[in-house]
Length: 199
Image 1: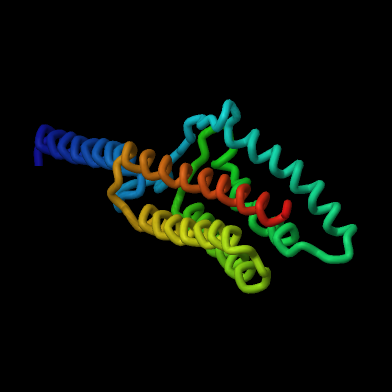
Image 2: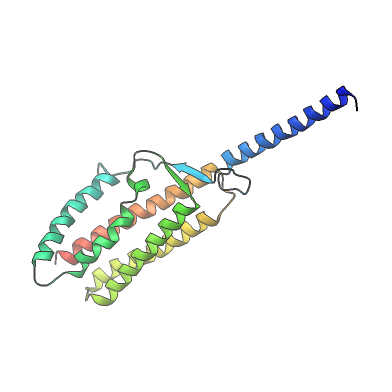
């Protein structure tokens, strides 16, 4: 075999490898969770959403400050309020890094599994409250709405986790929707908490 033929074969193989690398790089960028993707993760940063001039993180801190006072007062009283007590197990899903961070947070399949699991645990805590506490019909309605919303959230997280061929913009839109579901559920929970602990 002549040197020219060997050189052509070498250039052909090198060109083919370069094309494969370019293809995989493009697919990895455009479809982060695809089968061809090298790094199956997506960096997400939610837009700052304001509620009456405050962002989600500020509202969460205000609620936690108020809640810690309630928890201390409840621990000093003879009759424990289960809603106050169980709130400590509910708050972690609303304090997740990606909900309050100013920086991008990387999402991979493991992170989706963790978030899904936390939502399920929180739903179980809320279901136990339905059975254990004698709420008014209005309070119970709020609680049932939160549980329904969490079921919907679980479904949406599962779908997103199992979807391999979403583009970056579709992923961003889906994560924006899930972010909104979390923040809206937090607002529902705060309303439920206020109505069930201040009566």
